[in-house]
Image 1 (tube, rainbow, N blue to C red):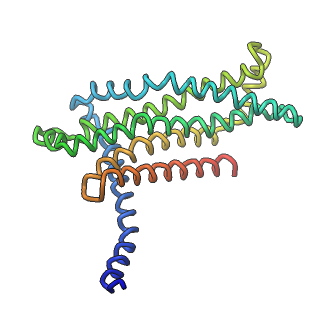
Image 2 (image 1 turned 120 degrees about the vertical axis):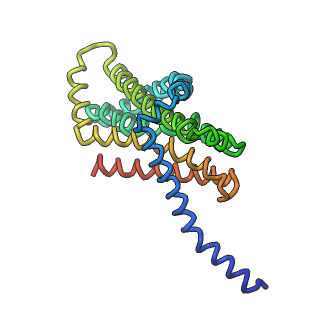
Image 3 (image 1 turned 180 degrees about the vertical axis):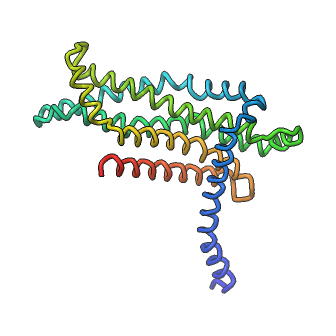
Length: 267
């Protein structure tokens, strides 16, 4: 039989879970606030992070831009074809393009771009930062009188934000063009109706929600993985456990943002 002390320790461990969970969120929020202050501070850019920022922006955007745009183009053609054929069969052809734009441009592409950047760029960058801290690189920078967050973390976070926004914006433009070509072909006869339908979908409220959602997606996939990778070396558990918790937190935030945007768009 288990001793009373064992049950007491188990209950204490269970009771501490919400505290650790809230503490983890607080660390992420605090980390995000520090990065935001550094990002808007001119002194951060006078400290010589320009070359590092340019390098990370290039590495996190250019190599994946073509692949992601091609993927979105294929997805657009397939979904447009399916939706248009289905709409024609039910006599709802006038709603086909509007449905494609709402599903692809408003919902799928921003979320897919954020996840693509997270898996390809920000999560590996977070792991690299955690390894640098473990090896003492951050302490070496502090001994030199340099801020490791400004020198190593800020360029990676800004590059992730830029990459997510760039991929989402460019892919949305490509999707809009290909959706038009898939329905009307190369003729210009449908431009007036297409423009009118686009303006109907992207009214000021929806456009604002779209911009904010894309921005918050980029912030979530850039800040949360790197914060989790940095804080996993502070005695909270193994690096693997902290990385998994970071992924869960990131997906939870993305789901929350998407849910709020859906409520704003359709209710």
